Length: 253
Image (cartoon, rainbow, N blue to C red; front, side, top):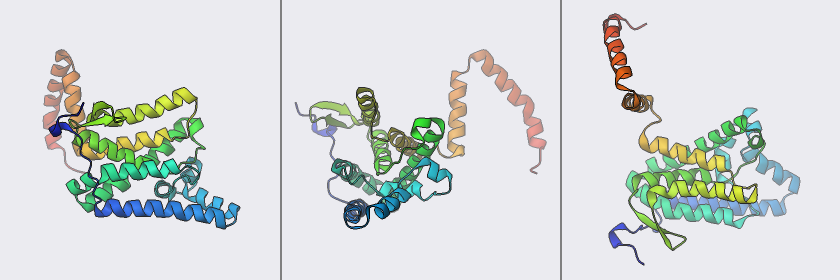
């Protein structure tokens, strides 16, 4: 059954300038890497690849460039890796680029990729099994785009698996849940779930503005006030009032 026209999801398949160049660069690097691995000495090619892939121990020892370089590499033994990320970029990127403009779009793409890498390193420090995992791929940035779509176009619908109508606001949750389902079924996964979550979280922070304390702190206070029982709220209000004169008399250091 077809979805009502006004609620169907229309992807911008006409490539925009930044999306086009990102796609060219990603595919070009994948092709170049594949050629080098087959023509250059295997040890040298592996060393170069490992220097650019994201590995938490290496980052902790000063290889901070990996927080960005990993997002431009893809597994040369897995064609589906570059195909999926490239396809998702083509589907999701153009409309966001047209909405935000070239500069804002590329900034969003790079920041989600960067902080997805940062989140992956932090996850490795907290969870020992993730510490020595090597990560490559643009999936962190792609999940940032998925999060952006989920928040900016929540009421649009798509056909999941070309059959099930789903609102876009659930898209990021479905994607992350899919990662955990694969992990649960197989007992292990080659997918860097921590990188996906980091990219989606970064996208959420950037879209909502919650990355900035001036935005996040007032919202947090408002949330806390809403959840505070009336008696407790009265105490907080009276305390704030009693502190007001001292606050006004204070001078900046």
